[in-house]
Image (tube, rainbow over all chains, first blue to last red; front, side, top):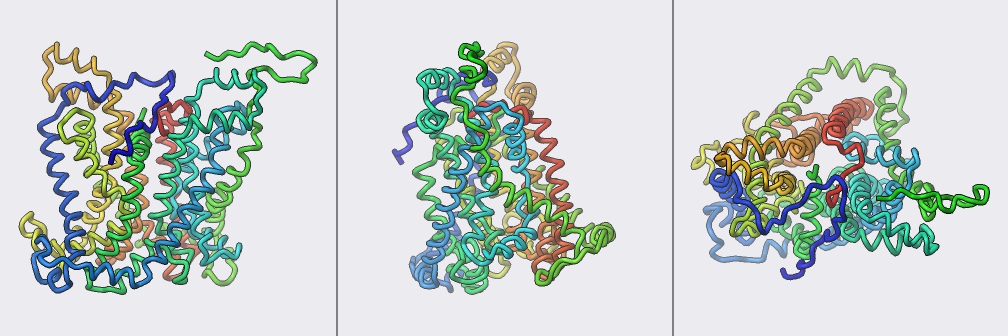
Length: 299
Length: 309
């Protein structure tokens, strides 16, 4: 847990519209404290009870889970449910999902970084039009395009392949990526670009040696978000793939639910297993993730 | 400040001004724009086109003019689905906003254990919608789930999923359970930006905590509230996984909200033209809301300076 000592977004370069950000460390006494404090405890219970049950019941034998008190601590913990899940092809689901996530992140970064860079560094009408299109793109729900995508992916001959998941997922991760990246790139000061320009640096070098290194925070946020989106996506895999060999985690989980029927502990064990990789990422990249999310509400 | 003197603008337009030296060619953005267009914008256009056709998913779509649209406005199922979407949206907003606001303001402060609690609050956001829907499906199973133990204790009928109101409320609750941390973070970020002097001045004037909350915190958070509310609204208009996994639109059609109706029409009855019409209706509403968002929250002026957006 000591990995994240480095603040993820250290360079908040004198941005004109930014209000002074006061340090959390010397915060005022918070307001509404008694009510909100109590509320937070209630919410804590609402969050924890399902999570506790998830883990504890996944360790129970089926009869104990079905007959006993579901809130009880498993008296005789067993990993049998986990073995059941692992034996039903869980690892291939994991492999497919990891592949989809990595490919999605790669595509999103390769395509979004130049778009954001152009949006920030040029003043042409075209680039601001493009930027606005991406802005609106945030609001396009995947459900709105799933019927035409079904048609297009079929025509492209990609139906029931991992590409059928990767390409639309990457496209739908792009608007947020462009927004986040242009936000961080805009904070790189103009003077530094000018200094490099005087040295005769090409635009390409400026991107690689200035904009990208100084936007690391934004880039990691984007990478994590795209990976999460790919990892958790459900609609695209559901509609655009079919065979078992191209099945990803979310769809696999959904299938377990019907396959295992009332074997609730096994279903819960599958859920736990599906969360483990994300949880590992979270522990490593907690700050980038939270800072990225918090930035959404800025102003 | 960066006003560039046109130093190098000499020699008959051979060179650009220093301010333009090293600016990337717009062409760099083309691959990204094309890719996004192919998989997000073009499909939108095709969806509109398909909404004027009849298509079973196998043969070619055939034009049927306004048939789908006239049907849409007469279809009582569509009417019900639109109504349920609206109800779900209102319930979700009314449930999530006060809780997220209070939690966010609270988390922006300085309590012991705040970091730890915030980390716990965050966990639901890591689970996929699928996993969460399945988890609650298991927990709320009237025969085996925790609900049969806890339900009577907190005044919830163990068969809550069997009643139409109950099922809709559960869908709203599960969505809130998942996205509350996200909105809490948004409010936390907003609350941290409120200048402390406002509170100091108010304390000197003798304003109590409640008054400070209503006269400083709430007004200062109005932009944050806009952003969060719009995200909630668009989010709950497009709930899908939860409904498919937990209720399958039931009992009866009592949780058949628009996205689920679209899915059922398109991919279970293979009436894809009509499904495209439903989807188009959905995107019109979502776009209208997002345009309002761009207007109200000032995203449009490209001046977002905080980390992230």
